[in-house]
Length: 401
Image (cartoon, rainbow, N blue to C red):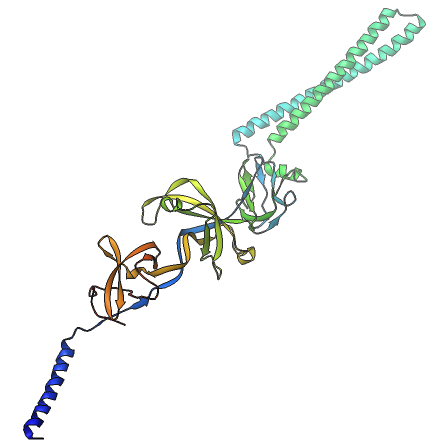
């Protein structure tokens, strides 16, 4: 081989290498993206909010009469039996202290009552003396009439005087009783609360018993003191019969109906609890949100379906997170919601085809916070771009990150 041929081979090889290097340098590089295959799996759409547990039937035991409540010894959590367990005692109220003017008037009434009692006693003594004299006169007249000394008329007159004095004696005795009772009444007006308490040997109380079997949920009035009729004292219920109430936006509540399934989370246990909607209340109310926005809310009541052993630690008024199932599918074709973007009025997604990104219009069904249901446009196993950035377009070379 001559020198010219060798130079051509060397320079040709060098030129080819330079050409390959230039083509490699100026060739568009593939963008690194996150790729994920389209999967089929369970998907669930829920709505919910923070809820609260409550006993199905709460009974408020109230004072039946106005009086003085004795200290309630029962504690929250104590078991009670209907008609047997005494939860409170109400005794007659103590008298009020008298102001100086009222006390002076009462003492004047006391003196007047004492004088009237003394007068009645004197009149009783007088009536007794008159009766004794009339009785002796009647006895003498009967003896004389038997001997024929006096007439029948004189005997009848003596009997009439005796009967009249007997009646007068009864009147005097009754008047004496009235004056004594009047004296006791006035003395009672001047009696202090301590004296009345000392005179009462036993409690003339009204015993208030539990209306149902269950447990004491809350003691509304523990210390003794004056209570009015109808004032609440104790709340009683059965913690084994719990329900959950959650207030939802009215726009969400209209999607829910009795019998819908739900699950309870963040209640303190290790696993979510199963629940079912029992009632959607027909009356809405206005509630101010944390951001100061007026919202129309509706109470939704649920029953816990899970066994009692799983949630026996729950009680009345505990906070839980409620999620009501609006839709679910165990075999839904789904993609991450971050992979979707708008293509005019349609939803689109980038699909990887032999290292090239291809825009494809898809039909989207239900969406959750993380996944979207695909009704058409994709097949299971196809790889899609999870986070399409600005640099990705139809026909761009891509590679898995």
